[in-house]
Image (tube, rainbow, N blue to C red; front, side):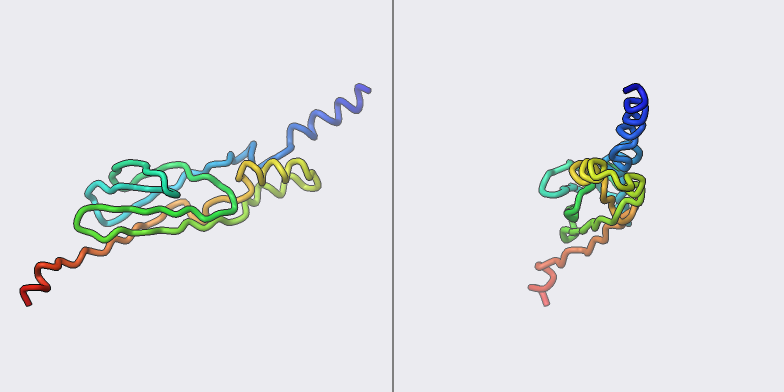
Length: 132
């Protein structure tokens, strides 16, 4: 019995390796050439008014993350964060429970890049068009 318990404990310790070693959220930094404060919305949830560069944690998972940035004098900018496979999950080997936990927590996937550049386009001034 003690031998089985001795073998079971390490197996459970390394269950869901990506969740344990890397977590289910990853740090992502947003930057831009615009230095004024921007209103940042991620997946429909307003983060608030921030200045760039700004770092926050993005959830893993299979769905892409939609980032919307708005600032005065510029058209709103929408950025899509795609996810890629988290190679640390391979440490689960043949442990179906570990794969399941990593998939359920979102640790199986991670954002494609660590830094994203938000491109802003100046808004067209309608009053100048009417004068012409």
